[in-house]
Length: 455
Image 1: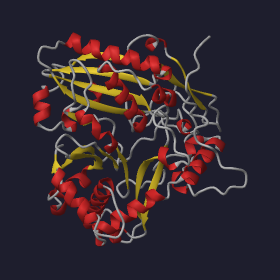
Image 2 (image 1 turned 45 degrees about the horizontal axis):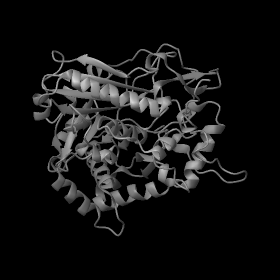
Image 3 (image 1 turned 180 degrees about the horizontal axis):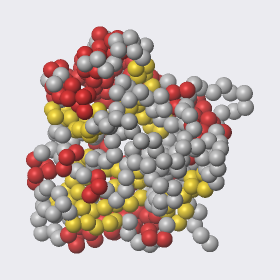
């Protein structure tokens, strides 16, 4: 009898059709060969897939019609049945040396996703029917090191779920046994993990996630652009541990506690808005907002058990009626408003969103950042919870990674990622901005006092 695979669940029915991709950098270990490294990777991957059978599957979509976006399912994927999902690639002649990458602080310019990643990330539209394995890895060998890419299908896992996968993968590399409770939670039924609203229970407001259907445009040729496209750049900015401490202290000068994430998000949005207003791209009285991805596991009552892998992300939106108010406010005021929007994501909000998704036939009409105005608003996702990676031993031939990055992939204007702290306590902010916004930030004196350009 075929083993029943954990399914994407309600949140996994949103039309992601993309991957969450992360790269870890490992220096060559003395006395260790590439074969040793591959042996560790294959052993860890096979143990992982044995514990979580759905990771060896693929995501398919069935039942698409003119009015129905279809249903995502996880089904067996022959290439990964009892076989390692780790792909090998010799990038010695395709990439800079590991020493060069490390010396440059692993910028986007040296991490080409077309070379280093076996799949595409946000911003790339896959053709219907493309094979989409749930989990795949690529071991990229460069001179002096390894750039190890982990990729998870976003319908099946979010970054929080992928973090659990990374933790279990590392444990397997060290020869440790998996916690059976975590494994059981990781294989739990995603379709029932979020209770729906009860009859008569009023829904929350999810207007910021509503958009026109994209079903009718599927398969149609794109209209020819009338003007040359504006360049869009992925850029890393480094914030030292000292600067982060200063930012948090300044942002905490109000009466409400704020996190380092709140402070960094507020600082980025405040300076970017100042640049946009100063250079005439945003009006002072224009409405603008920040959209932040929120892990909803702990928001539910009771919380989702530790180890759950499925997609469970909500969006916290903070809106200002006048852009100039963001610039004129103190950093603390902006951070506190960002923090307040997180508190609106509670048990009722998450259950309401799940109910909306479940009851909507055309799920292309629901998506994160649906109201985002390019060049005016920002969308941000935090990977800061993966801070433990900098000291995590991945086993023989690997050790702990020197850096955690996202490769340079398709552009998604105004999207940013807060990366996990490194061993020195520094944090990197990955931003995707129009060229004029990048130049404006790079020349902004207040921004430059705290942010170091990595590239």
